[in-house]
Image (cartoon, rainbow, N blue to C red; front, side, top):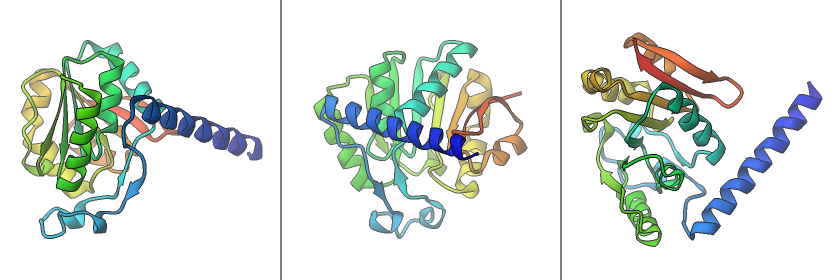
Length: 206
């Protein structure tokens, strides 16, 4: 058990090093944890259901996207709760998507994401300041990524509103720090990939 914990500790250090190199290589501001109390959507109905901003490990996102490729080709990558845009920019540099969309409720974080966009000059990336509970997914086969941006209340609303689009386009939900995967199960999704150690999973409608 002690040896296993040491290996996991070493892996996390390596993940952080990879993230640091990715951020510095491209000159982007992506890291850090931002508590929701420090953001600008306190008066919205979604505030109590939101979680803090924290960027996903590049490694975890890479695993999810690579596993997703086993189920077909996905032209669009959508990040729900995009924050500063890390997942979007990493998806861009993987060069697998024609369209990449980041959806974020906080105007403060959108401003940072757009500054990063100006630096990266990624023409296939765009950011939308929008409540996920009111966001309509694009009508194209997509990987819809979430890094636990909100609780089960908003998640259920967002997924329910887009259920037919997800079914029709055979899109995948890529979920990191998957605390509320039971919501997906209740809405008819099946888990097609899961890594318990990393808390990452892929889900598709049956």
